[in-house]
Image (cartoon, rainbow, N blue to C red):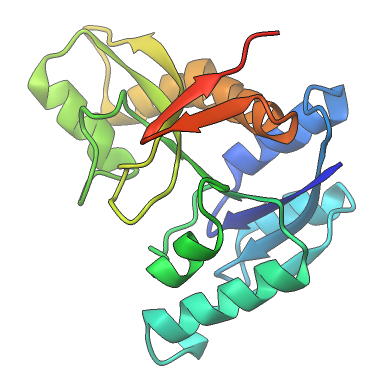
Length: 209
């Protein structure tokens, strides 16, 4: 049984998707053992507590720089025996210290079909604004491993979502979450916990049954 540690900063909707999947039995051979928040008032902590999941707070403002903060996160992950780390709305970019300590063990969900609308500056509602401005007909979400390049790690799963004529950024964001993010993030975590993801170079492949 693998220990899943989730890093959060805000409301925790993706965390809730993971919790719901766990409660349904959809995450095989893994369990959310800790939720670590960068903010003490993040509602994600309430979601964890309501489901009897241990929590920790590691505030970025308590450390002099990103390197010291990353060291504190690394220490917390070590203390929690993390087998896989999920970034679920975690708004701090971690130093390569953490990434190198957990190669292909940190999973992130991005609200577009990478490589489109990804990289520096593309996060949250900004992604959906850019999608609508571009006029593309399809967007979606990508679950990928984290490496030293923003949104550059191996892609695990992707799911497309239709862009509709009357969409606003908020409406599109909600559809992408409901139709893609909340479905493929738990699926990818379960695949990891079952050792069903094979990495070759910077590509991820799902092992066949």
